[in-house]
Image (cartoon, rainbow, N blue to C red; front, side):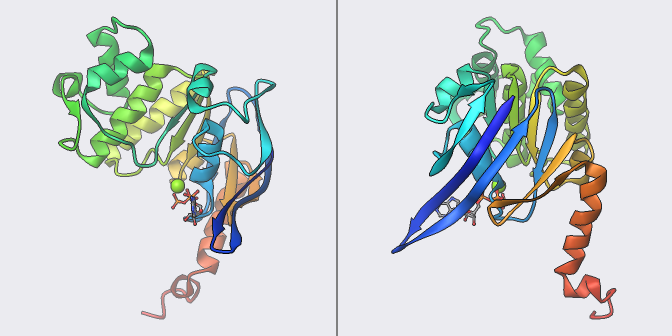
Length: 246
Ligand SMILES: Nc1ncnc2c1ncn2[C@@H]1O[C@H](COP(=O)(O)OP(=O)(O)OP(=O)(O)O)[C@@H](O)[C@H]1O
Ligand SMILES: [Mg+2]
């Protein structure tokens, strides 16, 4: 179980403090699929990085399976079973896709078959990619899918995906949503997925709308989706006028 207790994060801006996250508390039970959604700049990635240990909160506490992990670094949290896939994944010049999958799995002799299974889940063919370096020669969507495959290979207890749909074509996206559904159905991990996609939001046990550094709404997908759509219409003058502004 993951517990966030009164998490705040602020940065200095000149003489004043800018609040990025404001007193966020939430609990996520094991094996749940929770989607964080909400407007750009709302604080979703910052919250995910705070859970992973990439950003240190200004105040508040994070408990993982009852253990206070607030002061632990990213490596220690990874060892405790937490993994995070970046919104914009880094590249690793000199390392091949096979190297990354092998490192992630912790199995020094990861077979080609196993690699192939992970890559297929994100819509890539092992024959084409296993020996490719994860450098600038790969497209943005390919790097994104390879990173998601490494998270699957890691088999962590808590997997955090930051906009897994970003830059991914429709066919691979369908594959990916199936993979999330399978992980959820087998109860093999808890998942936090940051997403703007209705298809992913509809898979969630719980949807948490993060806006302006706070939790604006939380509830089931059936409850939250209509509210998100209503919010969207409310802020767009063209849509609210029914298109007569054209
Ligand atoms: N170190 C920092 N210094 C200044 N501002 C920051 C810092 N980190 C984050 N922010 C700001 O905090 C806000 C939240 O950023 P964050 O990346 O968490 O948003 P997000 O909800 O993930 O947005 P998106 O949907 O665009 O990915 C943004 O306005 C961002 O510019
Ligand atoms: Mg983000």
